[in-house]
Image 1 (cartoon, protein in one colour):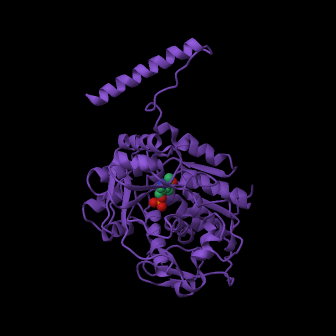
Image 2 (cartoon, protein in one colour; image 1 turned 120 degrees about the vertical axis):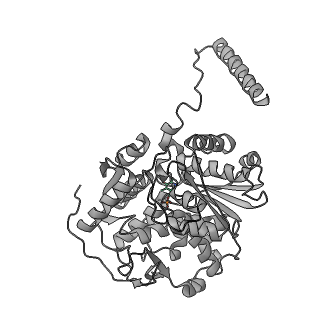
Length: 438
Ligand SMILES: *Cc1c(COP(=O)(O)O)cnc(C)c1O
């Protein structure tokens, strides 16, 4: 493989298929051309993609979307790419499952799970953001793509770069789960395992982005990348029969996905694809890395960075770039941001598996544990239509549950050995029930 070392020249020719108009600073409103930049030159605020919504409301209809591909690209007009041939590896349009058994356990009535544990190709919601970022990277003329990752992003970037024939170098913290490392290496990228936490990885990558001509999906391509998360909002609206839910619960790392679900809802209201109503936004963090939950609890509008220490590595960002915007959204929508312990996260993983047959990773365990905590505190109205976003797959973080899930019964290949083992199992079951009852 050849990793480019020359600063690349950006292509700026626009095609007529583009529906986005450029980049705009979220803080001061300064406008920029749609290049590989992510920070405002005036005030250092983050840049966001802008669209011509008047035009979109004329050209986009429910019927047109429904006729589109069964992937995120059915919403192409709302994504920041110019091509009619995006990188489509089947990302998106994951199941929205009515979770009746889990709802009953939590004492609520209308609960849905948005299941990105089975997203394609690498079993996390990150495939959405990377499909968009790499399509845009190709349009801007990048031949080498990269990322600073907590695990899932490295999996996605490596896999989708392989499919698109782009060279790839990813950066991860050296202490990641085995499944996340293997699930990156298999695609043959260059992998840099950095001896430090995610925030240190990210700082290093910002320097590399300045010196090498690489497209970092979550640094210099971040405005495009983050737009991919809006599809988590669009799909839920469409899957609820073109309606908004009343309440959503989603995990927070940088806070980006949370803010983009919000943007997705707002856009569909603005162009008339769905009738507007108030949706409450609640966020989930692990107590061992909860700078956003702390700012929310203390009523602050700045984030005090922390040093992460939790099993929920995929959401362990101590200095979250979009944290203040997440707090703002939770506050103004009358939602909450809460945190849970590592033990509660393991319980959350098991609860979702045992009630709904979905094996999620630690980020999903965090979301379910926070959902439970909010339900028990009366902060989820039992009548609200609530959607919990499950963003990753449990097979990638097996370390987290090892030792908490029992063991298989080893038997000889004989009927009586089976019968004896079954009796033992049933006795154990009865004992467990007796313990529950006392
Ligand atoms: C990255 C990640 C998140 C959080 O993403 P942000 O947009 O940075 O908040 C949530 N869940 C999983 C599984 C992730 O990999």
